[in-house]
Image (cartoon, rainbow, N blue to C red; front, side, top):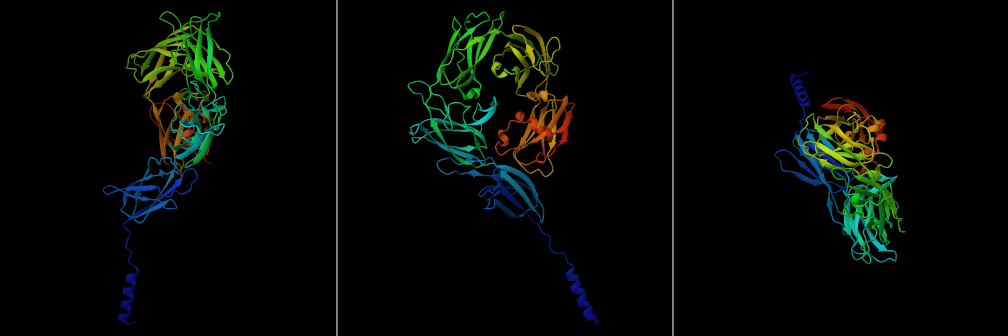
Length: 538
């Protein structure tokens, strides 16, 4: 072969083995979907922030996606905001931004997926039975809270709910509702100076007959309410002792059982029984009520307490008789990490009724004395109770025992009427532990709630040991803080259901369902404990 030809071949070979230029930038792709339907969300605002650079904002397309090409390598903060713009006269509502962190690498695309729970809108009209609009009626959309005898009960406060007032046509619009289950209530103006019962959708005056409404992400729902005008009633009663003698000066309280206290009228604390033991409660709404009678004792006398259940309907109510008995007195001292004297602000010893009639007896006993050194006295205790703690800090009860050593915190105790229990000792501690729950591999759902609860079912109703942590977006792990040491815990991921979004689920009501999907960890002392969580979706 001629030398010139050989030289040409070598040159061509050298050109073929040269490396292509390496990319110097990367990209981020954001996908936004609706949490309820999993459909793509168009028009979501996506903001990128990178150190030393101006923020960049763009909106998602029809496919719910947005691409950010040619980005410098490094860490980025990505935030998604969605504005819910309903039709009609409802106000536009804006969700708090969802945020995630990512790192851009040269030549690679980082994909982030967001699921957004969009606010819902509820609109409707209030009409009389004859079809006339009711104007000026306050409307409350109230979340479902606890249950009473198997029926859902409206919460006391309309947290995550909403309010409006009907216009001249009787229409209303409530926007910005979080997904969940709700009661819709219309409060009617008095008729002939007589207060009327509230009306619940679709047109009933008792919560037992009311229909709770399921609201999902982004829903726009219309309801109708037939405003039936049913006057409230007056309930007269009688407070007596064991011998049937009338008790004067007993303070009377009316507590609804089928709806939370703040969501219904309660009797004024100024209502007391007269010299014959008689009392009158006015403007009582339809429903099931507990009527309390408490005559506070003086320094050398006991507190008399009694309660009865009253079912109020549209017919006249038979006058209830409340028999009062001497309540027990519990007096003792709280010790804070072993110290006899410490500023006890932020902590308060309470007592909780337990047993089949606990809902009736709840509220009879009260802390009548609570001093900065931790000494306390609780009067008016009748029946099965256990000591609990109300605390704004991390304090919890390690033990609470009577003079004979009986623990009255880990298990309920049947306090005898009229007896005085002195030298009660309550050991408090704020030396708690942390449980780090590592989410299952590939977990990409949000929001998330991880729950820790004792493996002993007898303690499931004890708020001391029910702890949880939440996060709005997918995470790799969540930390549950304030866990009292000294026992084994079950730790599980709480999964939302379509008819009960995560924020509306009370963990205490589903602990039995979580057991098969829980990991067990023994928390023997203050410190950090790590546990790998099973996947509840399998």
